[in-house]
Structure formats: C-alpha cells, structure tokens
Length: 250
Length: 284
Ligand SMILES: Nc1ncnc2c1ncn2[C@@H]1O[C@H](COP(=O)(O)OP(=O)(O)OP(=O)(O)O)[C@@H](O)[C@H]1O
Ligand SMILES: [Mg+2]
Image (cartoon, rainbow over all chains, first blue to last red; front, side, top):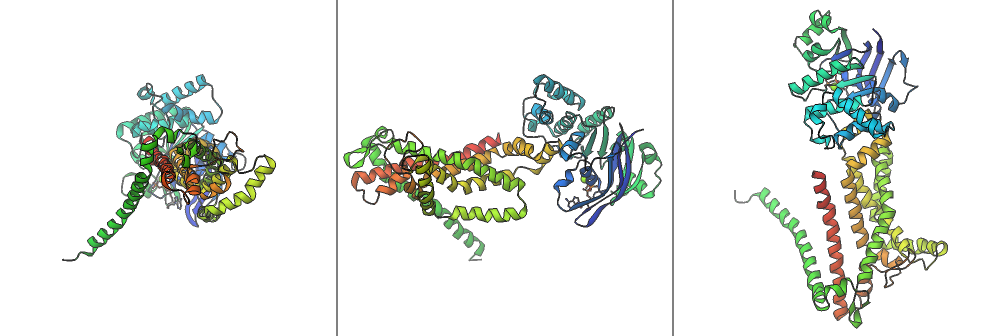
C-alpha cells in the first residue's frame, strides 16, 4: 500500500489555543479513510490544512510536516496549484449561481480548457461518476440552484471530479442529506476510490464503518486510534474509541 | 391602564415617519400643479421635443437639455463607474482592516463635500486643463463628466461594496477550493453574484449625477444647444432651472416648472429601476 498523505506531528492553534496536538497519520492511496470524532475534535481543521483553505483564516498557526507522496509541498507548490490536486466537497453543498453545466466546467475552464467537445466530455464523465447524470442529463443548462440538496451535493462532487484531483476531501458531505441521497454518494465514493485517494469526515460512525477502508478516531485535537476499519470497529484497542463507536458519547 | 406609554411612543413615531411621506407628496403636488398647465397649453411635444428655448417669446423646447442631462450622466458613469467598482472591489476583497478604516471615512468625507467646492475645483483645474490640452473653452461636456464622475463615486462605491460583501462567503470558498485564484473568484463568481447590487449603485449614481446642479452650472458652459463634441458646452435640466428661476415670471416661470416635472419623472424612473426592476430580477 502506498502512502499518499503523511502527517507528521501536525500541530495547529487558533489564537494560541491548540486545536491539533501533534497528529501523525499515514493516509493510503486508493483507499477511503474515514475521519470521525466528536464536534471540535479538529477534523475540519485537518481538512483545511490539507487544502490550504486555512490561509484565509486569521490567527491560525501550524507546525509539523505535511507530505504528499513523500514530498513537502509547502514551499514548492502554490495553494492554487495544490487545490487542483486536492479537491474538497464541503458539508453544505454550494453550487455557484450558474447552470449545472457551467458549475462543472468552471474548474476546467480555469485551467484554460475551452474546447467545447472536451468540456462536454468532462461534464458528462464527471456527472456519471458522481451518480448524477441520469437525473440531470436533460437539463444541463438550468440553474444548479434549482437542484435538490442531495443533487447539489453530488454536483459539488462532480465539479471536484472535473478537476481530476489526486485526493478528494469530503467534510461531512452527507450531514444534511436524506438516506437515499446519502446512499448515492456512498456508492459513488466506493467506485471512485479506484482512481482517487479519499478522506471522508463524518459524524456518522455507521457511514464510516460502511464505506471506509481505514478509520481514524480524533478526540480533542488528538488522534486516538487509527487502523483498518474492520479491526477498529470490531476490536478497538482503546476504550475511548469503543465508547465513541458504540454511541456512548459524541 | 389609561395611558399606555408604549402605544403612545409608537403613535408619535408613526406620525413622524408618515410626515416624510407627506412632504414628498407636497413636493410632487406642488411641482405638478405648477408644471403641468404649461404642458397642456403648449403641448407635450413642443416642450419635450422642442429644440428652441426662448421662454419670453413662447418657445419652451427643452430637448437639448434633456439630451445634455443624459450625456453628462452617462459621461459621469463612464468616469465614475469603473473607478468606483474597482474601489469597492479593493475595499471588500483586498484591503486590510487598517486600510478600510482609512478609506471608509475618506469616502464619507468625499460624499460630504459641498457641490460648490467640486464646481470651484472644476473651474480652477479641470476647465483650464481641457482648454489648454484639448481645446475649446474648457467649459464642456468632458469637464462636467469628470467632475460628476468623482461626485458620484461615494454612491457607487458604498452600494457596490455592500453588494459585494453580501455575496456569501461559501461562494468564494467553493470557487477557491476548485483551484481558482482570488482574482478569478472575484470576477467569475463574486461580481456576477453581486451584479444586481452593483447595477443599483450605478443607477443611483446616475440619479445623483442627473440631479446635480451647482457644480454643473459652474463648469458646463450652459449653452442652449445639443453638444456635438466632448468639448462643447451644454446646459442641463437642473442648470436651466437654477440659472433662470431668479428672474423668471409668468409663462417663463411655468416653463421652469415644466423642466422640473421632466427632471422629476427621470429621477423617479431611475429610482424605480434601482429599487424594483433590479430586485425582481434577483428573485428569479
Ligand atoms: N476559525 C476559527 N477560529 C477559532 N477557532 C476555531 C476556528 N475554527 C475552528 N476552531 C476551533 O478549533 C477546534 C477544532 O475545530 P474543527 O472545526 O476542526 O472541529 P471538527 O472536528 O471539524 O468539529 P465538527 O464535527 O463540529 O465539525 C474547535 O475547538 C474550534 O472551536
Ligand atoms: Mg467540522
């Protein structure tokens, strides 16, 4: 198994308050890695460090190493370039106020892909891979804001796929969705891991157990336990993990 | 309880609030009562599309002034629009807290400068500059547009700024997370999303420009014809009223009120477009 992302003793603090207290973890290539943990445990902070969206926050300080394929890209690659390799799907689906087609073509267009045929192909493939194609194929030119919440979230997944990233980060992508939409996203992710490395943050431990290959449990800014999902859920080594996955707190 | 203080306060405030409506009504009524009779006497067409303004000889054509008013207004928009929008974008997206604290009061000050001061500066600096480098007398369409362009900056900036700030942060994040640069995000997502508010700012700026009087009569040259070049002098609707009201009597005076009616209608239309036309579009 190849290590895609390695965090080494990653620390982060907001205005002197430490929210990540030395996280060390290997995230494997072509796997779905589930991040779980109670609110405030630092999951979203890790995501925003990985995609460097934290640079828009004031007063955050970061220490430690972040390695992609063994390389520290902090100094060598700009945030804009990095975000083309590390795609993100947020909790609240936020399509741009444009048509379905244009939402997905947005990223490729930024990369100067303007050839209509090529764009069409990207849009179609991305929508298919996000399990959305059948529902929208007849109305690609209508506003993306008219889609249902579940469809919007899959649209956001599709537009991330259109960038052909290497890594996809999903921060509680199903928190506002009904079970059917959730299942569709899960199906899509299980297919997509063939080509991508996926980190799925979820408060729903059942979801993590269902679809992730590896699972990490965070608590108060620390990585409490990490391992193969099956082992971790059937045989947690640490009591805190057991309490969390059996729903005693969280 | 015989005397309910809460209710009393509400009542008083309602009366005050409605009084502003009452004043507005009064102004309208007054201008219409004074201005409409001449329209009926001379004919709408002869006033609005008439080319000759000789009110003591029975000609009340204000077409050149209508055209001139629109010309300086668009001129002002061409000068002030891009400048104001850039400034709003800078303020909303790029400036740090300290810069914001410097610029915002400066803008308020700019808005508070009396228009006679703008006119004065125009006469002292802009008019000679135009005369020396471009030709003509300097009292011209271009000088007026430049000064008005500066005068409408605060309106355009503050309304565009509010519109840009009200674009949800999540739109920006969505775009940035897809690898867009900050500038790409601004011109592909933020400005299009704020478009209706920015348009409203432009239109209210136009309203301000078309209504401006003092600065305009000082620099426009006030000639009674349709300007054929940027260097020609012109007379606006507001200028016409201000210049002649002091000595006008009889039909001449009524002619000025008719000018006022036209001005009022144009300003109402602009306000209507800014408030309703644009909002409706946003709801769609
Ligand atoms: N912008 C910020 N400014 C200050 N503190 C922050 C900021 N964002 C997060 N924090 C703090 O960092 C800690 C970790 O937050 P984070 O959002 O990473 O948690 P989380 O695990 O994603 O929680 P949730 O499950 O609720 O999303 C929390 O204590 C939070 O208060
Ligand atoms: Mg979170």
